Every structure is written in C-alpha cells, then in structure tokens.
Length: 139
Length: 313
Ligand code: B12
Ligand SMILES: Nc1nc2c(ncn2[C@@H]2O[C@H](COP(=O)(O)OP(=O)(O)OP(=O)(O)O)[C@@H](O)[C@H]2O)c(=O)[nH]1
Ligand SMILES: [Mg+2]
Image (cartoon, rainbow over all chains, first blue to last red; front, side, top):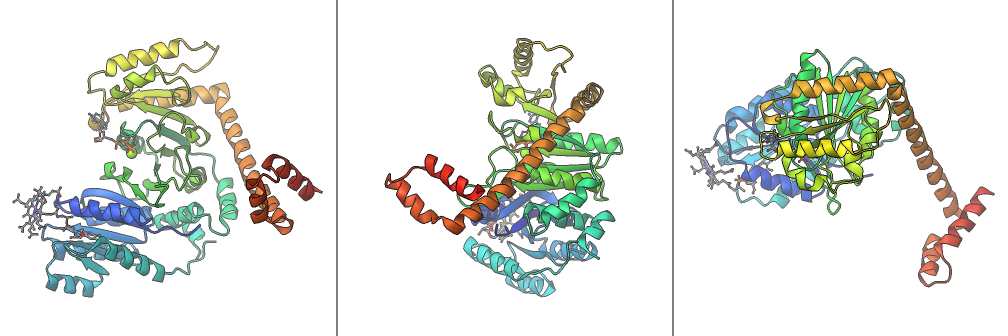
C-alpha cells in the first residue's frame, strides 16, 4: 500500500474565519490525503501535541486575523521544543507579501494567500512530503 | 536507539511512529506486534458505536475525562470513513477533544477506514495491541457513524456501548438485527431533546421481548447529555458493572479467547491465501482464465476446484 499523506489542519487563536481552511481540507481529502481537522481556537501547544499524536507529515495553519507574525513563530518554537522539527509547517490566509517572505525565511515552508488555487497547495504538499525521508530504525 | 526502545521508555512520538508502522503494514509489522502482544493484556477496550452524529466523540471526550479523574491512562482510537473514490479522508473526531493533558496520560489517534466496511479500519484491532502494550488502562474506540450492520467493533472490544439519539426512535422498532443486538449498554444521548423518554421506553420494551436467558447480563438503557457532561457517572457505573459481571461469570475470558481465535484464523487466512495465490500464478495464466470464463468456455466454480487440487498436490 502506498503511504498516505497525513496532514493536520488547524486554526490557532481566536480567529473564527474557517471557510478557507474547510475548502483546503476538502481539496486535500479529494486529492487522496488523510486530513485531521482540529477546529478553531487551538493554541500552539495543542497543535503540536495533536500533530505528534497523529504522526502527520505536515501541519497546515490558517490565519485571517492578522496575528500570523506571532502565531507562526510560536508554533515553530513549540515544534522545536517538542522535537517535532521534522514536521513540515505551512499555511495560508490574509497575509501581506512582506510578512509572507519573512515567515518563509523563519522556517514556514510555504504560505498560500487568497486566490491561490488549491491545486497549487496539493502539488506543493505532495512534492514536499515525497522529499522527506526518515532513517529511524523501528526495532 | 530504535523507535521501539523509545516506545518502551514511554515516548509519545515513538508510540505514534509505531502506530503508523502497524497501520501501514510496513515490512516487519507482524514481528513488531508479536513482541508488543506479549507485554499486553491489561487494557480495557471500550467500543462506542452508533449512527452518524449521535454524539460518539462527545461521549468519548466525557468518558476520557472521567477515567483520567480516576487516575487512569486513556488512549482513544477514532475511526472515520475513507472515500472509496479518492482514497482520502477527513478525520474530524478530534474537534471535540480540547484541553487534555499532554503529559502522556491521554492519547488520541484518528484513523481512516482505508477500504474496510465494518465500521473500523482493518488495522484498528492491531492498534489496540499497541495501546495495550504502551500501558493505557482504558482504550476507547469510536467507530464511524454506522447503520445496522457495521459490527466489527465486537471483535475488538470487551464492552460495546451503542449510542442512539431521540431521532433514532422511528427506526428502532424496525431494527431487528445487527446494531441492536451487539449492545452491552444502550446510551440514549441528547436526552435534552424531545423524544428521548419515548426512545428509552421503546428500547426497554424491545429488550424485554427478547428471549430470557438465565444468568445473562441485562442490557441497561441509560440517557446522557454529552454536551453538558450529564449522567456520565452513570455510564461509567454501568461499564464497571458490566466488566465485573463478565469477569465473575467467566465471560470476559471466554470473549477474549473467541476474539483471539478469530484473530489467528484471520492471520492464517491472509498468509495461506497469499501463498496459494502466488503458487497458482506460477502455472496458471489468470488473464487467459478470466477471458475463458467470460466467453463461457469454463466456469469459476469448477476451475477454482481444479486449481486448488493442483496446488495442494
Ligand atoms: C467571510 C468573512 C467573514 C465571516 C467568516 C465566516 C466563516 N465562518 O469563515 C464573518 C462574517 C463571520 C467574519 C467576521 C469577522 N471578520 Co471577516 N472576513 C470575511 C471575508 C469577507 C472573506 C473570508 C473568506 O471566507 N474567504 C473565502 C475563503 C475560501 O478564502 P480564504 O479564507 O482566504 O482561504 C483561501 C486562501 O487564503 C488559502 N488559505 C487560507 N488558509 C489556508 C491554510 C492552508 C493550510 C492553505 C494551504 C491555504 C490556506 O486558501 C484558501 C482557498 O483559496 C474576509 C475578506 C476577504 N476578502 O478575505 C473578511 C476578513 C478576513 N474579516 C476581517 C475581520 C476584521 C472580521 C471581524 C473581526 C469583523 C468584526 N469587526 O466583527 C470578524 C471576526 C470574527 C472572528 N471570530 O474571527 C478582516 C481581517 C483583517 C485582518 N486580517 O487584518 C477581513 C480581511 C476583511 C477586511 N478587509 O477587513 N468575516
Ligand atoms: N443537544 C445535544 N447535542 C449534542 C449532545 N451530544 C453531542 N451533541 C452534538 O451533536 C453533534 C455531533 O456530535 P459528535 O460527538 O461529533 O457526534 P459523533 O457521533 O461523533 O459524529 P460522527 O463521528 O460524525 O459520526 C455535535 O454538534 C455535538 O455538539 C447532546 O447530548 N445534546
Ligand atoms: Mg465522531
């Protein structure tokens, strides 16, 4: 069996705009992925804990509230703290171009803004996950 | 240090990796399960099933909290359906599980059915072995939203809770087989809504008309309001009563032994049919056989017998 891509989608903070992430979730599912949706009001520790428990390849975050410059770094920090730095972090929402560049420099793999077709995100995720490899020995 | 070494140390990331390894049936997964199985046998497996939206996840949340309060370690497996068309799945049960401790006492894993039709994934049962050996006192298993006949849960649990809602009322009387027969406990959730009293009555009546078997467990019907955490203590009490009853009557052990018999038969079937099919492919040209059957030159009933005879010689 070909390994399924598993991706966690979450909305951090108090941001209640969930249309976009639901569109993305449905598109990822229809592309054959297993999408774990955690819903609204997630804190960075909750998000990273869920990602670890679900053993996902990637975490996708959606932020339309303007708080992206604090939330993305907080999630990256938490990932490092929990030894989950190998999980891919990406996201989207209302994010100005300058911030997008800054976030991608910080370690967010990619940011998708309104108008970006979901096919682009699917293609990005498939390629990025295919590049990941693990040399951990199971036993 | 291997993943398994870290698993034994209680590392949550390692647990997650082991689950994926088993779920994806990677190379040595049976050997791995074999090792884990021998350290297990202690976890109580509680199955929660019922129609879509009945409140399974909400009650899993309530039960998990209650068990945590009793100082038990709780693991959850929540199954949602895979699309048969795209192979993808939207796993949404986690939405109801916020604010749990992240100190290893609580663990939640979403699983997609990946083609299985019995309400669980084909590998769910194997994942309970992993949970057991990791040391969860209680394993809660949530099925997909079921109709009448997705009943795999009985092969994977020690106790089955069937969750219904007032809206199920109309169908209960006509539901003769399947779901209605597997309940050890009936839980009428959303008791804050109209119609729950009637459903409870109907369920009790239905149960009363069943043939009375001496010394049998009397299936209780209780009501809960999951979103208000109401009556969960009662649900827990019934669970505990049932487990005590099973243990005292020897049925607990008997039930597990029946499950183990099924399990080894399944593994053997998988292995044997794999070997036999491989062998057959050495001398039989399946493309040609299928065309012959299609054209009516031969038939599958006779042919299967002939092929099998050739292999077993
Ligand atoms: C619809 C909407 C609402 C609805 C939300 C309904 C819902 N359940 O989602 C309602 C009316 C509730 C609402 C309320 C508010 N809103 Co409003 N809202 C919008 C609006 C008009 C459209 C958003 C939307 O749904 N777009 C459609 C979806 C499909 O697109 P999307 O979310 O952008 O997602 C796409 C991409 O961004 C990307 N993407 C997004 N996330 C992710 C994640 C991943 C992993 C990937 C790969 C891609 C990806 O892919 C998606 C598909 O292409 C926007 C304006 C706008 N043009 O965006 C304002 C907007 C987002 N809202 C805004 C504001 C201020 C508010 C309020 C605070 C208003 C108020 N004062 O009450 C409240 C806050 C509510 C809350 N609790 O958070 C501001 C935010 C300003 C900011 N960021 O600085 C905006 C930008 C309007 C504006 N120009 O001022 N809003
Ligand atoms: N009124 C009322 N609503 C409830 C109750 N319990 C759960 N709900 C709501 O019912 C909806 C479905 O609940 P879930 O717990 O997700 O149901 P589920 O059985 O897990 O659903 P699936 O996994 O999708 O089959 C949610 O909106 C809950 O808030 C209850 O006791 N009363
Ligand atoms: Mg559910």
